[in-house]
Image (cartoon, rainbow over all chains, first blue to last red; front, side, top):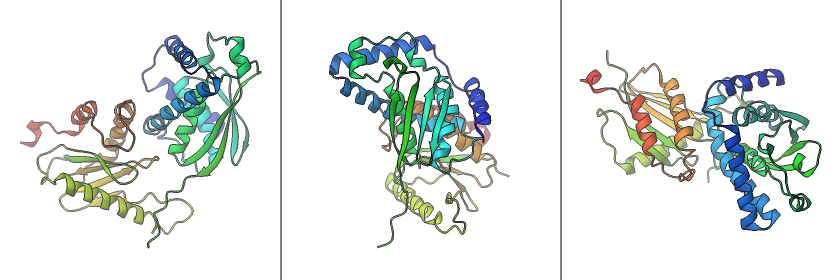
Length: 188
Length: 144
């Protein structure tokens, strides 16, 4: 399926199945969570990695819902690069109603650009957080990493740009480390 | 002609361990839990070996999908994440694939979204039990 078709598919899936919750409630709750983590850890690096870890936990579970409800009708991704459009146009659309663009696709790397990151609504980071580089939406990176890992792709997912840190876009870089092999062990 | 029934459902984790089993009819001989575990492990092994004898090497073979016998059918549904759903039904049950897709959706909603469930570990989940009973168990008046 090409990008335009996938976009339409994601749109249909988002409209169709699934319970929806109030976006404001969701982003406020998330904001409170990040604030609490910051107060508890007092170290930005630790907050970033805690968010990544939480996202990972969500991703490894959420992939099942994606596969069960939203992937029938989609062709199987044979190589890593083919996951880019599916993650962007279907995954982010269905679960976050976010529009995501894909760029710089190579065989082992691509960038996701969030045109409207819903988590950023109502958020302004204090100067100290900007200086130290708080990755406010790092949970999304963890989600993508967890989900791809469950379908046998070991990836490194990092925020390269964040609007909240003064960059022009919000960009997540997804890099393939290796495919996880599922071979039967050879006979002894 | 017998009415199509679902006898039981098993869920196997990635390593072939039986993490969930539930019976929906009283027509099955009771296997004790040890026998069930052995059978599930064997099924996992057979499935893995079968996916390697495929003559087509360009794409990965998905392994065994159905085992048929004259008294029951056993349908295996392998998800992309490696979990297997096994449905034991009367022979020629017409809707096994549809039922298995529905089971997978219920599993994603009830098991994976339960924060106290540890992936790959045995599933104890009342909501799952109840939901599955709702569409897999045949009402009593149809069997007697």
